Length: 350
Picture 1 (cartoon, one colour):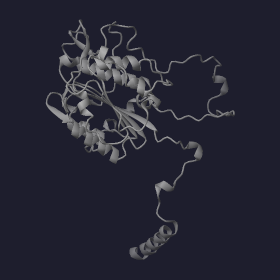
Picture 2 (spheres, helix red, strand yellow; picture 1 turned 45 degrees about the horizontal axis):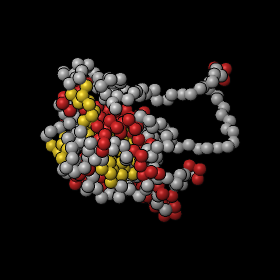
Picture 3 (cartoon, rainbow, N blue to C red; picture 1 turned 90 degrees about the horizontal axis):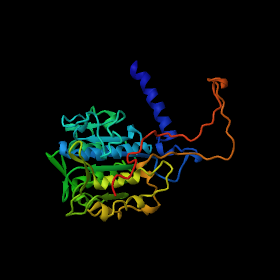
Picture 4 (cartoon, helix red, strand yellow; picture 1 turned 180 degrees about the vertical axis):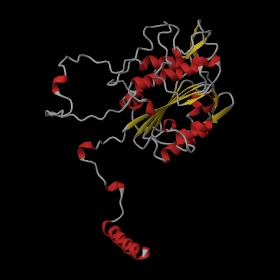
């Protein structure tokens, strides 16, 4: 009885497939007004502090400061992967528990209540970092710990810690080589996990980490060339250790002047921290990047894309749920959507 019923259904289904053809996602077209010529549709950031121990306080200040900047410019926490190898805020040597500062004035705690750390402590490993980039996550990995980028994603990768010629140390126990990093990024490209990628690294001999890159659409900057050390900026006497690295300090000083609608470009950003202030030589690699960095808005990587539709005609909106009399007509004035305090409120050093 079962076979007599199923056979006609199978035949009918086969006839339908033959007539209509297979379902192809590429045949579905969006209305023209929603189609943009740019392939850039969203932004992601992977921010990694690879070092441990109290004397490396500056590295966690580096990564938390960059985290705060990209979040202020519009990238949501759901699209930021933050990896912190040690918790300086809870270190017993910290005279101000639950705080991390990035300048001696201690103007703002960058380890605030709104910080969402995705990988903490011994979770910050080479394996987890490579799995994150390539999407080869273990079963059961939380969605918040996954880089869910796609072919339309502009991805910012920021690394800070201790490195050498061709390697970056993770927690003083293992290291990732420049070839392994290059291969991981190639997997990202092959699996359509990025549209464009900006690689930014602040370590000693940092430029060696982008030398092996061979994937397209990559723009890279490093705090020091091969054979050079990347130096710290200043000590906070209250805690007795260096509090931020020199290159990241000047990069953040630049980013603090950027707003969501800023016209500043990646070309301008690549020239921050000249040798007279950085002491090390900032390295740049742009042979894999097809665009002129001076024509690329800095918000393409440090901000969040905001698709908008401009119209010259009026649009009538009818509110059917909330009565109109509940609204008070008040001048909106100038809004401050971010409510982020400046990280560098004044010139600290000459």
